Image 1 (cartoon, rainbow, N blue to C red):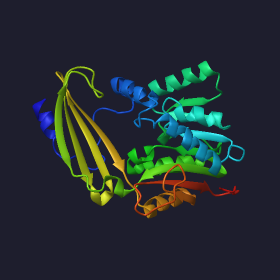
Image 2 (tube, rainbow, N blue to C red; image 1 turned 30 degrees about the vertical axis):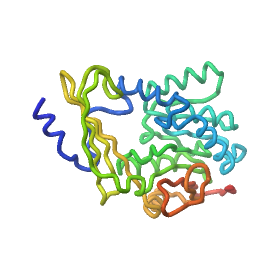
Image 3 (cartoon, helix red, strand yellow; image 1 turned 90 degrees about the vertical axis):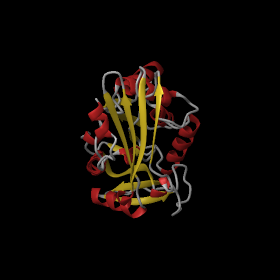
Length: 284
């Protein structure tokens, strides 16, 4: 175990994988669902009041009357999906977490909501010209490695009807400006990443040439060493515009956030509205 821990204490190579999957781990998914469902946390899902404000704004820039069929990627337990339904969209949600999708399905059944859910990695989805609008919310796109980002944009393009829209949030490099690399540790009886007593070593690494950071969590238990690597890529305006263009999209609008704030070069986040080539609908 010591040799394994010693190896993990070095700075990982860019996009190196850990040995625990954050989104599907049995224990972690419990805490993730709790964070999603807490209406006052800006954690796995934003505060639910903010969710309603976002959906209201999206309804103005991509009204359900024009963009009826909506695909919510990284939908979690359906917090946004249910609000989209209330706003008049026909909603499909997709998430890799079985625990979240199970909750979303149960909630939809209980409330008699005609929302379709898929438990699937959206990097591997295979829809064809089925949706008018795709949303990718709360910087989920930033957590993907380079190859998966390219694959996801292509899959979204294929999933959209001609003239369909993608609404996506990204962080800019300013999000982590001035934050220095660090390492800390703590011993706890139970925690977010593991249920039993363990030592948790938290590290923050910068990869400035690639505009990428890593939050790493090493969990030392009585029996093993677990490594959770959470990567986060940030985008310049030109980089993301180019990535969208490679997939076939045209940028139709750019905002400072998903509430319609004016775009600012010094902002920490951006909201892009991109359109698939084809029949063009007016965007407010």
